[in-house]
Amino acid sequence: MPGLHRGGLAAAVALVALLVAPAVPGAAGGRVLAHDAAPETWAAAVREYWNDAAVYEAASAAALAYAKRQEIDPARQIATLEAILQAAVPGSAHAPSPTVRLAG
Image (cartoon, rainbow, N blue to C red; front, side):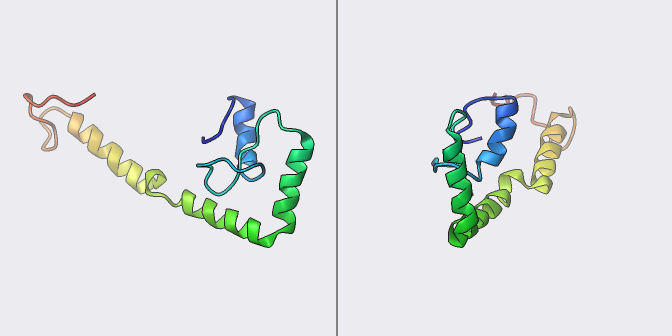
């Protein structure tokens, strides 16, 4: 996650933080709050989304667009996985030639 400073519970909290905090480049649809930000900083960010419809709508639209990106489309992920698995099956029509070395 862009701007994530810590793992574990903080990672879960960061999901909420994407909606409330000072802007961080790459945090599509929201903002990331530092793990040690003051409660007043959180409150100000929440107030901004709550009181400013334009800010809320812009963040909402950006988050929706980010959620619709191809990289996380389940059908595309399954098709990619199936292609990789098919290519790994010896003798399959999609398997690489024995003389072809796969990158990696």
